[in-house]
Image 1 (tube, rainbow over the protein chains, first blue to last red):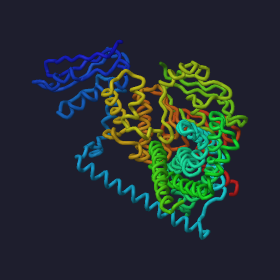
Image 2: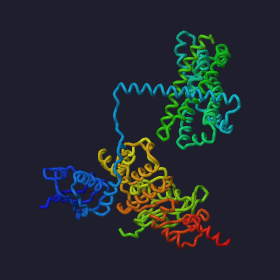
Image 3: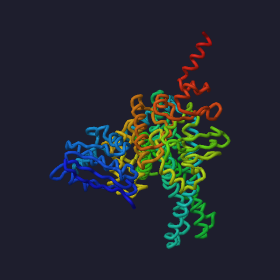
Length: 376
Length: 261
């Protein structure tokens, strides 16, 4: 490809004339001023620098960039530069590029702190983020107190909409996941149990696993990805567009107005979804038990009835309500903590899902131990 | 390249969303080296017209031509090629928030030229210097003020040395001095780069200071109410809406005043 050319000639009076020729376009790459450096900086620096551009055919930023890099060192060294020979557009752009001096201290210094500092900074950040979680928990508790006294302000339409989004609209995905989990349990269990000729206990396995733990946990995880992330993105975007600020200055607490309805919606819908997931999971187990192991449906459901009791069922539903609140809590926390940019909102959504899942699993462990001690 | 050559032609363009017609039969020509102003009251479809001109929205009827070639009928590959000669400054800057200024400005360069990373950075720094942001290469958009974001957006719009620059309300949200400096910068860039500029604005000071030609979109009739150099429109236009707009309603006040007096 044809590209811009540059050469230099020195006249008797010490003037260095730089000759520019050919087309100077970005597509042709950037000619480097290196070749000129030794002319400019060599043993005898020129007294004056001039340009000649009669053979120049077309130019763009590549030429301006080149000239700025020639002119700047000359000016630093006090060598007068005569720009007469340049096209007027180029002269004006050079002037424009130099019009505003570099702001002192604007350039960010990227210094990596030593290891010990980084460990310290990370632990400070860690404790700060833990403090933020607990103070948010405190604020939410106050808000729940206001709700109990009927003083919390939010729009009931919002609450109904949130209930619909988190509840009815989540049914298809909850159906799919819990049906599959139920049948996977039955399948894995059947392979082991059949070795002892105890294939019929597949029903106990599926029933207890779904009702005690998996119904609530799987629904919680599905909602963390589906609804928790959405809450974080919604609230994060509201921060970007200053909607949360508007609420605050209107005297409405974003906590009451945004967080409470979401906590209520998930707190109400999760138990229902969990109950539904339990049922669908047991049906999934039935599909495998009846279809593969040829256990009669009556026997399967009879075993379910015998093994699952009301305590177990209500325990699972109670857990689901807690997981729902945790999902809403993490989603709202991360959303309200979000920075004001597109990437920050993305980070908030990611972090909301991670926080929800960590909290759900932690709570699950705590419940398991507590229920064991209490003897449920 | 003559001064008066038509650069962009908008012919009989009708903008509609479903059955709702926003503007009908828009017909005008932007000449090379013009600073062409699209003006009109709030919500009349100025920005939408700009979106139609660059293909973000499709006209319900009519065509847009660049250098006599139909953009509306061009296939996607051809459109991409035509748009490479176009730079757009969006109203909010539209800088990518996850990238530094240098990365923002360098992205089209890295995408559409054969320059290496060091050269891309060099040109990006030059563009930032041109808009007065020398030394801000490693800043993220969220660390800048509104005016600086606008200027960085301008640096990105001119990354590939476009022939045509579109500006969507460049001075919205800027103080009068910043807005004046931006006008000067636009004028300077037009003169030195030889670009054609299309600007959507209702900033009267800018309109009179730098506009060489204009169209006025009337929200009542949903059509062009007047076209021509803004100063001429202010002094000579017969359309009362246009006069009222260009005199900030002073015209209407004097009329009312004289009627009462």
